[in-house]
Length: 406
Ligand SMILES: Cc1cc2nc3c(=O)[nH]c(=O)nc-3n(C[C@H](O)[C@H](O)[C@H](O)COP(=O)(O)OP(=O)(O)OC[C@H]3O[C@@H](n4cnc5c(N)ncnc54)[C@H](O)[C@@H]3O)c2cc1C
Image 1 (cartoon, rainbow, N blue to C red):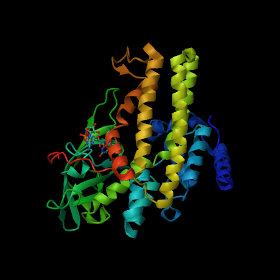
Image 2: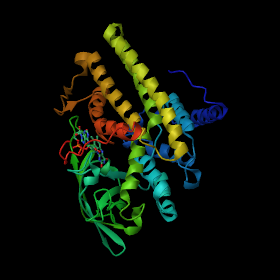
Image 3: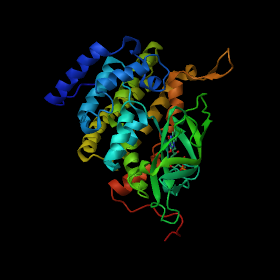
Image 4: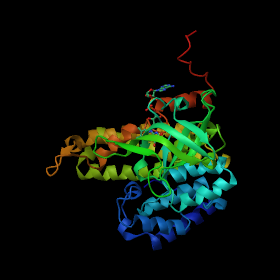
């Protein structure tokens, strides 16, 4: 395990508190279970563990106390994650509700909206998916065409989203729609919290078409909305002001996982070392060199994460430097899983299950596939470079492709 940083007496006291709590409360049957498996509801006891964490104040921990969070600092969040990793139990979160929607409501919502929506995220009543991308609006998100028409006290939404992760498990979507067709591209967009079901349980005009992935699962959908209705009171940040709210959400998507990443990747690194030792591959000089490369990257990620989170918590909103974090971990994860595939050789190949004739990928091979997408979602690696160039380094803006080159 990496060296434990001396983060001062307050952080040390918090570390002791979490360690003691976990020693008495961590369920034995969840030891070694990944947060991902738990989050997807594939494990027995997941709901009970979520309820225990919620009751003990370990849910939405970085939200301010007045909104039901724990008001933890960046350093304390880092300590919390390290202690869960040390106890080898998954830290359940409320997913996109906790790290994307909640923080955006805290910055942009009215008092009434904060009271209405935040507790439902903490107690798990509302599970959100992200309705941003469309077939012709990905990197250029402001090109979105989904329409929102005001009808009395409601906004009526029609259009198509794509790559909607976790939509089949969600009951709410934070959805971008164009509520002013004549305004310039970045204006005229509203950020709506759209119920996916009506009160009686039937669909609110939302149709989900799952997209099948190469390793057999279907994590996201094409999402079609036909006159889906939400109260106007569900528009966050005011009518036609959705772009500014979106920037807050995307900042959190790029920077908000800064403390979890190093914990996850440190654990993964040591598991890789164990796996390669068992198969005798650690005597290969190329594999050893790659492990040294990986270890130094994970350590850099740890320090980078701590730095970014302190900045985020001091300013309440992640700035453009969050893009450095997103770029670094996503490119690392992609290269690391690729190198592990090479190091494992033939044993990393997909095999066909004798029983049902389907391809089966083990955990490492699945991770390799999964990380192909890490440099795409949340803004592609190229788009992060544009942000770093223009908004961190102050370089000239990229040329508008629709205008002739000088
Ligand atoms: C696993 C996964 C999960 C996702 N989950 C969600 C979700 O839950 N909700 C949601 O709304 N969306 C989701 N997305 C969509 C994601 O946000 C988009 O795929 C992403 O923003 C890129 O958009 P695009 O696919 O349209 O590619 P494009 O924008 O068409 O980009 C194509 C290529 O052109 C490059 N490019 C584009 N513009 C520039 C530029 N200005 N400068 C340099 N290069 C450029 C890109 O880097 C890329 O290589 C998910 C995507 C993936 C892969």
